[in-house]
Image (cartoon, rainbow, N blue to C red; front, side):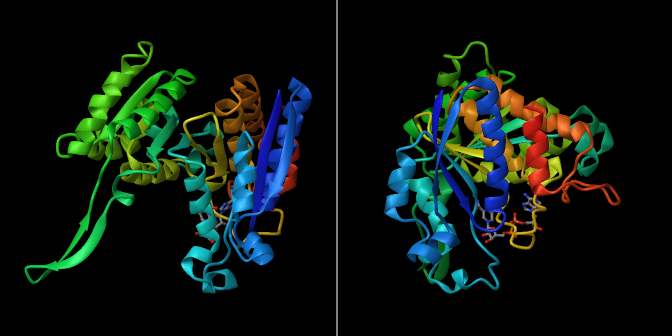
Length: 360
Ligand code: NAD
C-alpha cells in the first residue's frame, strides 16, 4: 500500500519522538511491503519563527491532500518563550485548534492500556491493577458545552453566566457509528456515558446511539451515567472497551483514564473525521524541560502511528506488529527516563525507537 502522510514534528520533543515513529513505520513498510511517503510541514512555534503564523493556509491545504497527519507536539515554555508574548490567535496552540477545525476532526480517541510491566506506576489498588485494563475513550470534539452560545450579563441586578449544551442527532450519529466501528476492531463492547437522568442532550444521545447499536448486533451495548463511570474507572476499569461520550464528559474521563495508566509518555491519541482521514499524536505536550536531550519517551508517538495504520489505512496486522514490539521491549526491561524505576538503567529516545523497529 502507498500511504501519504503529512508529518508535523512541531516543537520541543516533537522532532525527537516523531523521528522515532517514522523509523518504526519504515520498519513496518519494509516487513509488510508498504511505502510511507512523508511530507514534512511546520506548525506551532517553528511555524511562527519561519512564517510569523502558527499554521499557514498552505500547510492546511497540503495536510488535507494527504491520507493522515502524524503530529509531534507544539508549544514551548509558556513562562519564558517569546511565542507567549504574542496575541492568543498567533500563539503555537492556535495552530492546533485551527488544524482540528479545518480538518473537521470530531472524534477523539484515547486508548488507556495498562502494561503489566508498568503496573507499579498505576495509582489504583493492587488488586485492581492486577486485572489490567484496555479501553478506548471516544470523545466528541467539536460540539456540546465548549462550543455552545455563552454569555455573562447582569439579569435583575445579579451577574449571571450562561453556557449552552447543544447536540443535534447528526453530530451524535456520526460519532456513534465511529464508536461501533472501532468496537468491531476490539472486544466488541460500547458503553455510552451520559447524564440522561437530567439532561435532554443526553437523552438524545441515548436515542440515537440505540438506533445505531441495532446495526451492530455483535457489539454489546450499555449505558452508564457519568458520575458512575467516573467511579467505575477507578473501581473496575477492566469492564470497559469503547467508552463513547460527549465533549465535556470525555474531556474529564479521558484525563482520569490517562492518569490510571501511570505515564504520559505512553499515551497515544487520534482525532478522526467522517472519512478515514485522521490526525495522530501523543497525548502529552512538547515537554520543553527535556527537549533536545534525546531522553523523551517516543512510545506514545509510535503507538499513535500504530493507530494511524489501524484506523486510516485498515492495516490491523501491521498495527498489531507495532503494539507487540512495544510490549516486547517493555517485557525485556527497556525503559526511558519517565518509566524507569529509581536505579533502573535507562535508554535514550533514539535507542527506544531502534529497539522497537528491530522487533517489528
Ligand atoms: P507536557 O506534557 O509537555 O509535560 C508535562 C511533563 O511530562 C513534563 O515533565 C515532561 O517532561 C513530561 N513528558 C511529557 N511527554 C513526555 C515524554 N514523551 N517522555 C518523557 N516525559 C514526558 O505538558 P506541559 O509542560 O504542561 O506543556 C508544555 C508545552 O506543551 C506547552 O507549551 C503546552 O501548551 C504544550 N502542549 C501541547 C500539546 C499538543 O501539542 N497537543 C498538548 C499539551 C501541551
